Structures are given as C-alpha cells and as structure tokens.
Image (cartoon, rainbow, N blue to C red; front, top):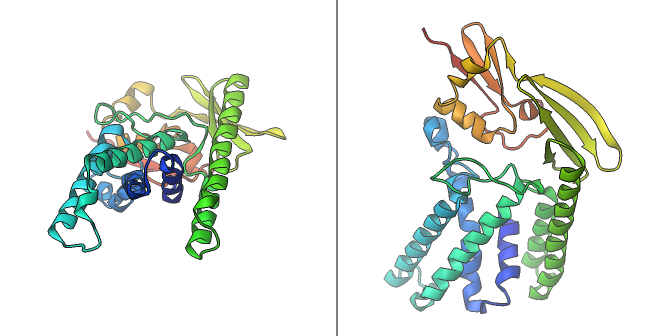
Length: 293
C-alpha cells in the first residue's frame, strides 16, 4: 500500500481506542516503514544489501518495530532537548510508544495483503509472504486515499469523513479477498492480481516451462503464452548461480525467474516484468552473470 493509505487507515483504526493525543504516534508508526524509500541507492552500490530498499527489511516485523523504536527515541531526544519547541516531552509515554509500535504492525499487516508480499520474518528468512488479494500498491486505494488527503488539505472535508473512508477501505479489502478466494478455488496454480482489479494472471508450471494466462473476471481468459524456464543451460547449472548477490536480488523482486545462457554469460529474467505485463517493482528485472573459468 502507499503511504497515504497507511496514514489514513491508522487514523481509522486508532481513532476509537486511542485518544487524540496519541493519534500522531499511531500515524507516525504506520508510515515509518516507508522510510526505506530513501534507501534506494544502497543496493545499487552493494547488491548484498538488496533488502535496503522499498518493501525490504523495514517491512518485516522485527525490522519495522526496530525502526519505529529508533524513530520514537529520536523524536523524544529532540523534544527533551528543546531542539523542536513544539514537541512536548510529556507526550512521549510508554503508552505512546506502544501505540506507535501498533501503528507499525498495522502497516506490516496491510502490506502482507498485497502482492508480491513482504519479508515478514526477516532476518530469519528473506522469503516474501502475502495474502495476494490485490497488487502492491493498489491504484484503487491510492486514488481514494489521495482524494481524501487532498480534500482534507483544502478544508473541504474534516474528521467525520473518515467514516466514509473506512467503508471504502474495508469494503475494498473485503471484496478483494472474496475475488482472491474465488480465483484460488476456481483456477489451479498461482493467481496474481494486477493494477486492474478485473485482470488477473494465472501461472502454472512444471520443471521445464511456465504457462501464463491473462484472465479477465468478466471476459475470461484472453491470452495464454509459455516461457521456457531454462534455455541453453541445465537446472543444475542455473542452481550454481542462485546464491550470488545479484541473482538473490533478482529473485527477491521477481514473480518468476527464467535462465538463459548467451555465450559466456547467463541471464536471469522475470518475464512478467521484462515484458511490462506487471511493471512493479522495477528493481532487478534481469541480471547477467559472466561465466568464469
């Protein structure tokens, strides 16, 4: 999900149990994992640090809570030292800290709903987990959230409008979950949502190829194509490259990965992103590794 949606959802979820004085901490906790947007240059310089990127370690339970705790401590230091006069040191209570951590966990939960998922259990594993009910980010939720933020900024709506936002927010999540369940039960293989809520990708495969179908909820399957998993290289040979940092980075961001040998190099490619079928995420769509020795 996008930062606007996380902020508004925190206001919706915490507006009842938390007093107004704590809502700022809930919102801050809900948006702090997206600080990884500023990390994008790190993996370019060191491929081993591919989790220092958007949707990386700050979107795990452990990483998110650690970043939230550091942000809370940093804000408390600024308030206590008087560096930021408008910050009240007395507001930084244990309850405020708990609310901020809860906001961060809400962010992780919401991003777990979106495909292709997040590394929930990092640092134990970098595997992504997802309910896969809509794509990350969801253009529907982003559009609705941006509209509400814009209207609030110009004074056309106020806090009561959060009720309408809550209906849209939870209604869309519920409808998306129903569609995902229908797709998973009706079609074998993996079902991947796209930016178009009516368009899904159906992926089946064996040891040699992937079979990919473009499916529309109203029009049915509109196109099908296959992609060889290995071209000019055996599975065992390709497996010899899988622990290289560049290949691990590629696999982390990919929906699918195919390997092809071209002379003195091997190229690993995500056919869905390389063909523009799913443009997100843009990172490491393909990587070419020279064959040494």
